[in-house]
Image (cartoon, rainbow over all chains, first blue to last red; front, side):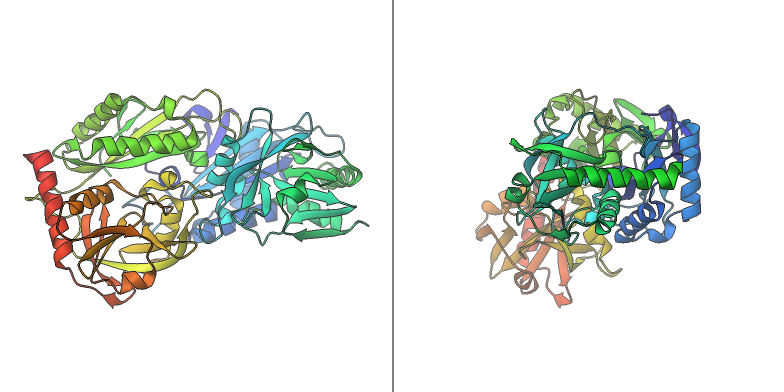
Length: 289
Length: 289
């Protein structure tokens, strides 16, 4: 963890960066949170990140107390600067603040706003990866809850279902593959999934209840301009095991190929390499150009 | 909130009672928690409460780092004493401690243990209620997740599904009635439900995915010794609306009658009154005798 955090508008040393035990974020998970990738000192896809944070807060009914977007940007910059970072994953968490009575939310909210940063390598065409080898993926028993049982926008970064999925992983595996209760594959515990079959790029549809990430959206956007077909839909574990290519996306991993899913081998193929290169070029142009 | 809390083995003033922003309880809801009712300075149904805490920690895979039961009891007593309380709801939360890498849990755990107390009236036959009138109950759209999507033992005190259920409540209502995805009623957001039909006491079966509470177990135990039939099973919202009597149970409410469910009126009937009296007598004998 880095030396400085940002708590309620102030940069504070990590050893002093704390929230009260009555904070509803600690007590009830009553918080909206999202992870923002910073490249060259600036947030990647900032509008999309803020949109995700806003939708999470809206689901909890406290979007009106979120700091203004310029204020959030300033806090992000201050967090990076304090740690002398330009390349990082920055997590922004906004809780409903301190509890007054029990589980029922108070009418007036003084939110708690916490930013923390984790260093990452430079991105773009001259960058390095946050991973050293392709990923090993394992299907787990843990499912993503139906949307009416746990809102997907409250599972950004994985959520409790993502954490429980990671707990099932053997040491050899890098990521857990989750499904809906009905058996459709959704995503990794803290990453999104792409499949390639016969030259078509597939991604689980965002109609399924999972916290579809920002990098996923960028990859779909990039791929839509290329010559190969792109589809979103409902897929099974068998579809994943029989894929020609597989990759995961996340703010830290960007695009990470999968070469082993439940013991079935896949190759790092041409569509994965193309999407990864196009992603890096987009980052290079936007942040280091 | 009371003047003192208990954090990592020490009584601390509430304004200093905090957890680090990297604590996995704050960041990932990676915590086991339960609420214990204290009567006359002693925990009610202590073994059952510790069992619930242990099962939650086991679900998260860190039961081996829970403090020993005698140690937890001592912390509870210290929390009550520091606040000069004998009648209270004490929440015990044990988190997996500070994060080292991302969502994946570290191999070695230094847990964070937090106790907080909220004052309540004296219980037993000479006691007062924590509520002033019977409850108004409203069915909500929020569902309890299937067990493989979010473990019920991690929803003690309501969990995020309970919180989201409370958010749907109009100001007039005291409690939200949740259902499974299939439509079977489970419980209140932070309480358990009992129905009376034609002289039989019914409770949703603990086979359904909800965090069945300690008071529910005591009421079922008490009722099994009486002359009226007791059943657990699967019931619908219609069953609830057509019930002759309804009541909710929780550590703070004990037994609280419901006289309005979705606008349908019910009476405070003889079985509710009998169960309530028997509960109070059991508390009186065990804690004030």
